[in-house]
Every structure is written in C-alpha cells, then in structure tokens.
Length: 340
Ligand code: BMA
Image (cartoon, rainbow, N blue to C red; front, side, top):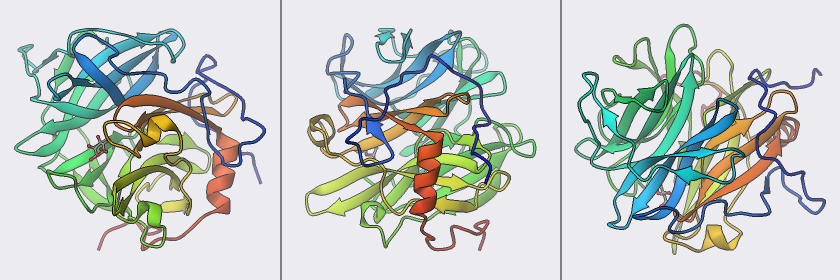
C-alpha cells in the first residue's frame, strides 16, 4: 500500500513535540498546555474554541474571547511560533460590503480557513437565534461580513480548504438555539457564497459509541490526503452530570465528502487533564483548527478546553490514519452520499 500523503503545503515551522514513550493513544498533548490561560487580554476573561492559520511565515488566529460581561466576540491574534500569542484589544471590526460597520451581537466558535486567496471566518452568530455568521479577509485588516449562509438554527460551520467541482463546501450541524441535545453533520455547497444547496448528510451521531451518542459537530477544516479528507470533529455524551465533549476523527471521500470512508469507533482525545476537566464548563475538548506540514506529516490540533483555555495536541498523518482504519466503524448510512 502506498504511504498516505497530505495534499497540502509544507509548513515546517508549526508547533511540534515528539510522542512521549508512555503515550498509548494516537494523539498526545503539548507538555506546556494550556497555551492560553485566563484573563489573556484586557476585558476578556477566557479564550477558547479558536482557529489559527499560517500567514507570511508566522501565524495568525481568530480567537473566541469571552468578555467580562459574559458575551463572546472575536479577536485577532499574532504569533511567531503558534504557541505564544499577542492579541488586538479591539474586537475584529467587521464591515459590510459598502465598508460600513457590521458587527454581530455576539460571536463564538470561529473557524478560519483559506480557500484560494481569501481567508474565511465562520462562527456562531445571532440571527434571531444561533446561526452561522460568515466574513472574509485577504489582509487581516479589512474584514467584510457576508450574508449569513443558512437559516437558524445552526452551529459548527467548517469550510473545506478548496472548492470541489467549482463549489465552496461547508460542513454544518443544524441545531436549536440552546444547548442542542441532538445533531448530525451535514454538507452544503455554494458557487458564490450567496446561494447554498446540494445539501447532504455526512455523519450520524454514534449510538453504539457512547462518547458521541448525543450529537456531533465539525471541528477543524478537513485536511486533504491521498486517502480522502481527514476530519477532526467533536462528539458529545450526555451524562447525569452534563455534557462531555471529546474529539473524534474520520476520513471522508475525496470527491464526494458526504461519504464517510473510515471513522474511528473510539475518541482520540477526551477530557483527562485539569484544564479540560475543570473550568467554566467542565469536561470539554473542542477542536477548531489544525496546523499541518505535508513534508513531515506532522499535525498540531488547537482545541478549546473546558470553555476556559486553549490546548494544543499532536499527531502524525501516518499515525492517525492507521488508527482510524484499525478502529473503523460503520455507523448508519454514513458510507452513502447521504440523500434520502
Ligand atoms: C457548545 C458550544 C461550544 C461550547 C460547548 C460546551 O454548544 O457553545 O462553544 O464549547 O457547547 O459548553
């Protein structure tokens, strides 16, 4: 069998630590976690569930900052190494297409994804309830907010990093406006970011795997590989003490990503460390982004921890793909194109 390869750029300077000898799982945590602690900038009590990209030889991020009045907004951050961050104290100043201020009432769980020459921010916004908000930038100075792609209620919008058959591809998780005790991952397409359609079902919450029995949602932008799209996502268990968020992984078909090729039966990261188990919301591991290097196959996963911190975890393409295949489980009709 050919060795699996990433169909992505080389990013030799991403954060990295080798796997500790005593680590049994396919994903290991950064030893200095959490990389972002409490009160990280003026007026912001906590940063978590945030997204980063490589930019001009360094790194740039869009951060979910929980202000001291409890309302989340998005903040821009810069880093030389992907670990130590400085932030703009002002919220990201979204404008409409005429250049006029166009701020969301709140904004959380951003993803930041480059498609062609443009960076897209997609987040959870207020559209008479929780829905997807969308903005674009090419220079991280002007942020043009576009029409909300979908009707309420929806969360966990994740773009693919390239168009497929000429269309933008967007994963989402239809929700309710509250704490959503249900939900699967769906796929939608758009030629122009205005009209969305060709909706398909991608992945079902897994009733046989109790860690993801309540709901699932897309996490980081899928990584293109010779095996298909590698997706890190979150899965939620409902316990007598509340929800528990873990990280899962799957591989979607390269040209028809509504088809799941492989999906790990087991979580690949679950709350175990103090910063995942203790915080504003205990027991949350919530991936929103990766940095990855095609040359070495290294992957650095950024995840929110306990709605209070940002953690970093590592794997390699070889290791995670082998693990997913070895623990592959077929759930529902995930292996179909997902139209009924
Ligand atoms: C979800 C989202 C996430 C959050 C999680 C756990 O519904 O709101 O932002 O991390 O709940 O509180």
